[in-house]
Image 1 (cartoon, rainbow, N blue to C red):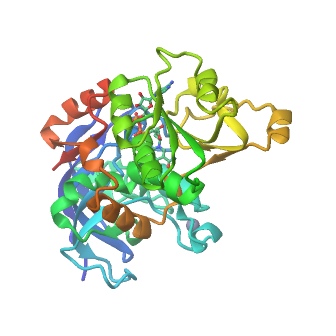
Image 2 (cartoon, protein in one colour):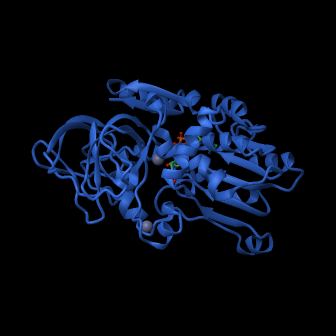
Image 3 (cartoon, rainbow, N blue to C red):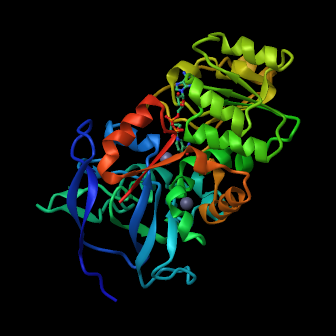
Length: 376
Ligand SMILES: NC(=O)c1ccc[n+]([C@@H]2O[C@H](COP(=O)([O-])OP(=O)(O)OC[C@H]3O[C@@H](n4cnc5c(N)ncnc54)[C@H](O)[C@@H]3O)[C@@H](O)[C@H]2O)c1
Ligand SMILES: [Zn+2]
Ligand SMILES: [Zn+2]
């Protein structure tokens, strides 16, 4: 079946810092390995806001961001390998990967050798784009394989995860990035044991999902840290046994040591992306402790490490992308955790009509909402 160009609309960022503008776009071409998806809901991740702000230098503007889409398959390319996918299926969209490098082949697509060009550069790996504005100007698209801030989008089949519960689709978009990243960092990447101590720095959608996952994993001591008391209160309900607000307790290192009998934590999950947090990250750790860098710092930020102490204290600092998840496996697992009452993401999702996008962005900014989702 051929592809007839589709006129649809998207939230287009014309230049950095100019906001998301609802504009008509044309999807001109769909590849054989791609899937045409009507996006019904799109979660807003902090990374999209960074994109609007010009924080991904390789991205050319105009550009469409959005990488937590959920919707319905409207057309399948002829070379799509997953024969269980069908037109009409409800799907959740996640990040892209090449499928053939060593990381992809060994079950770590988040560490795909082509992760950056496939996800952060916004466009296919051959630097083509699927969309244009009405005047023919090319729009950078397939951000994180998706560009799901659009009513319709074409994505690689590797981004597509079938959703068996279409009635819950509105609260599932965050599973494609933020929730997967937080929960996966605990359950797939670090795998702490119940007696280990875990600190989660930053209680946004990523950090809050990490806290929920620690409870699911039976971790007995979990320290949640954020600047906002409202998020701290929520984290207590989701699994944080101790909390710290650096505004009222500025010496967080000292407080963490006093909460862990002087030793420091076994795992620290950095989910703020704030450079204020990075300087003394390893001081929070116990000997053999691990810092997981999850939050995205400004481009070019360097981490200062005392090499001798790193060596003598056997500490590890590592990055974790997308919670070391295989989306097609982990998203269904998180869905079942949610349905069984172990992953209460519905309590941190707020759905806005797309017309109220500005309100959603304002509520994210003030911390009133944790996972904002807009409905097309
Ligand atoms: N590694 C990945 O694969 C991946 C995936 C998704 C998001 N991210 C990144 O993870 C980070 C978190 O994403 P999010 O959507 O949860 O963002 P968010 O803005 O919702 O959450 C960040 C939280 O950090 C808190 N915070 C900021 N500065 C702080 C400080 N100095 N001390 C304590 N708390 C502080 C904020 O109050 C907020 O609650 C972002 O940097 C995002 O870009 C990474
Ligand atoms: Zn790969
Ligand atoms: Zn994201």
